[in-house]
Length: 94
Length: 476
Image 1 (cartoon, chains in turn orange, yellow):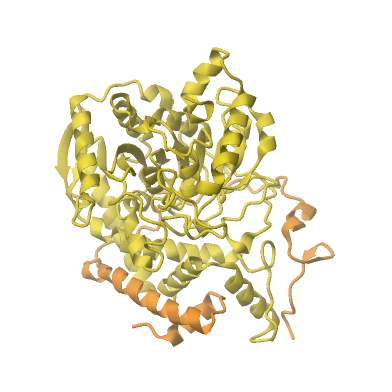
Image 2 (cartoon, chains in turn yellow, orange):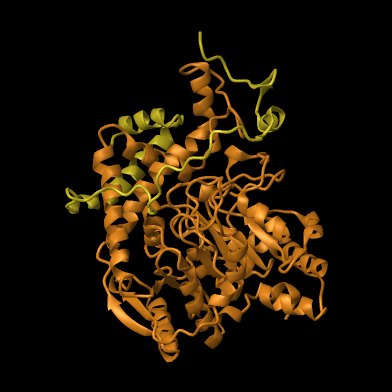
């Protein structure tokens, strides 16, 4: 069972504000979907290793050398707000 | 036939005989888009000036799904949260198309962040099926598939995380290829689920898919999951016959609830391929029934993490609430994400956050990863004895617009036959194999072992030499 309080807690972790009607609908939807995916509980998985990736790739590194990258002006072109060459954000520390 | 209706390979011969020109082809497609886009809503933006860049062997207009970066163009994943975003670089696939002289005709509609199977979850409104505009084109690459099916462009690119190229290709009567994971670079593809996402061609014929895959495939050091393997000559692979090939028919893919017309069409394709010398074997992929559940754990977990970047700081939408709730910056994050994400995006982010959260990780996410191992093993075992596996692409033909929007689970179950390829990394392709009595296309899916796209294309191409489903034109 998933409660409305669980949904509000998860929304906080996911950094999404939900209004009352949204959290009500999401509680119903998640309840149903979690009920369905719960069928994996039927399987005996004790001896099975997890697969996070279908292709067996080891860590992929490149040489630690400086290469050209986007310049500061280009990086800031999509910024909602900017100030002196930086992304401007609302107050973080009191 | 009119120029905009022709396949790339047919256009190539016309060009060779000097019966048309690249600018004429580009213009013919732009005119077709202008005349029909109000009906299918497949393009969210067109790029009419790009025709000037047409050059090389395949200078034919292409549609790009709204989740691949094209430098300077607005690219939004059909989400309010990315409205106005203009990438500062090209995705590797876009760079490869530009280098090859394939001109971009425009940007195509999709489900927001590729979350959906119907292209109804788009901030630009739903795309529609060119065969009957009361029906969905499938999704999430519904815009790309509808555009090719409506003959607005020669070909298109889509992305496929759980069937998002193959299912809409089946619904729109076109060819859709999901290559092996790692075959095509994901650099510049806006991420949904990074262990599953793959870019691929949507075309009118298998021959065209082979040509387009050759252009976009290959190792890319900018994508650490890209496979460092040579790209085969796919056009050449089509020439070999299919005599003696062993093709598996998985019994779990012919289940109750499957449309009898789809079943009949797939059975008929088996007869065509048998006549060409292929041998069929009944097989079992025992963990098939767990694919959808596994996918909706793994894919949403990865999505919730990938979509954390949309926080109103560096690009896209920024919103602040009228009154302070928590503190100024958290309020900005939460208000931006509430206003910017649609209902399905929120649902998936919430589900993904839940299955990764403390106390539920072992019960859901870890179980999902372990089940993924079993699903992949089923295919590894099957391909020890087989050259390919065939199945329907989708259990039904296209459904009506609005029919499944109120029940997310019924929408998720429409991916039941396509998800296994993504979970196990193998390639899959949908090709047209018939029509329902109502006149809607039916798709056949061909799957092969990892990095054996040549086999998949070869079987599909031979099938198209004996059938004309792919030559039928939607009457718009």
